[in-house]
Length: 92
Image 1 (cartoon, rainbow, N blue to C red):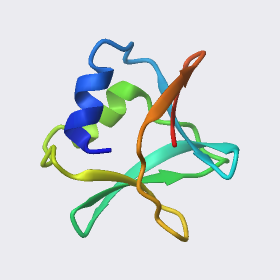
Image 2 (spheres, helix red, strand yellow):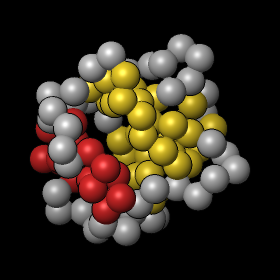
Image 3 (cartoon, rainbow, N blue to C red):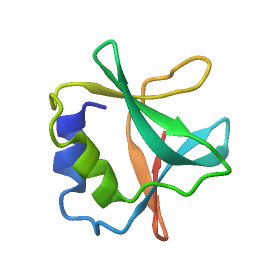
């Protein structure tokens, strides 16, 4: 998923949604964002508080919106979408 695709699909969502990622059927909070090799890396940590959609948008607002979203794990998988559950926005 590219950043511009995410912006378009999430523009009507509440900024209070908390950002998570699903890895091997487990859900982890995204607590930080890193930038590397033309990628946006979402950094999960099960012991940290998740970013909100508002914080995510603020941190990525100055980036090239054609960059793709990835999860910073051992394999660094590309993220292809998300789903909503309660107050969670869960990338997968």
